[in-house]
Image (cartoon, rainbow, N blue to C red; front, side, top):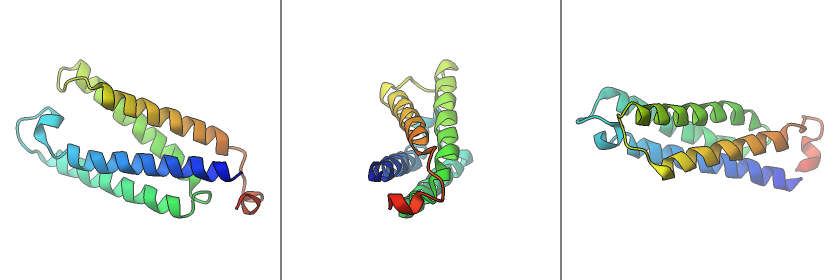
Amino acid sequence: MKHIITWLRICYWSAAIADFGITVIVLLPSNMGVKEFVYPMALTSALAFSWGIMLLFADRKPLERRWILIPTLLVITLLTIARLYAVSAGMVKFSWPLFLLGAALIGLYIITIYKTRAINTENEKEIL
């Protein structure tokens, strides 16, 4: 059952690294479809950085904090949808790497949520 912890850690770290990348990327106007820096870019950067830190804290106690998978999956899905909408509206160019990253993270999180669904507080100590 230790492989479950590995799946959780991969989820936490992959999304945290993506969040830290977003922290930097959104501060560049050309990546955001604008000509100059605007305040919402700073807000997005702060939120992405904070979420990344939260995921690293979740990694400290992966089983206890696995509930964070669900809101993180929601965030990843909504960010991917928002990016696709911005592409369809002509605000930014389509990027296969960003699309594939979003799709891969969504898949990873769905698989991990499925794998950890049967864990309850009674058998957590047996896994460790």
